[in-house]
Image (cartoon, rainbow, N blue to C red; front, side, top):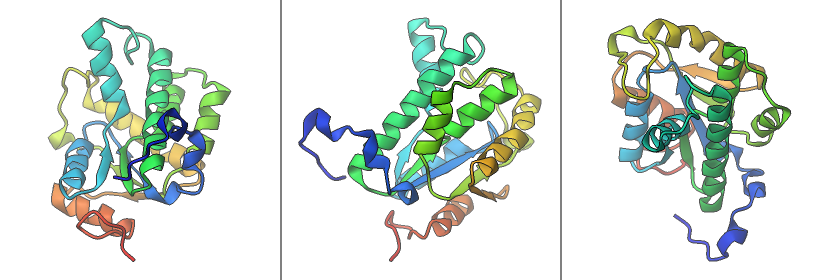
Length: 205
């Protein structure tokens, strides 16, 4: 990772300009195998940013906060979008190819599904913080779906949100690659090939 010694001046949202191709989204149905795929990409040497929503939920549960999808969804979305922008700016500082577990459009789609108003600044964030033109989606996969402390909704609810999520990415101009229900290694191979990188964590020439 490139070191930068400019202190707080290095943290500049403008660093995302012109580098969308180095920021790749892996998204899709909750419980569809994203986390395992991201762990595999990280194991292979790629920079990976894990799901901001899960991080926020863990923090809020730890401190007794209410910025949770089932308590105050609007507050949860604001915090999650902010966390996602932070990760993207940090990736801009490093300049390396990076994979992101979900993105800003996920939060906008979630708000739309819940019937919540989406503030103009959140839609502006989705416009400015662009990603690689191809988004990789994991489809609903009942056989591997599991609930846990941060994922309290059931499979039917998760599956119902998948169609609107895919439509939201398409509406924002992204091409969709739906990953097959196959092994984690095979999925990782497809993602890596899809962005023109090699298996050692480097972008192919």
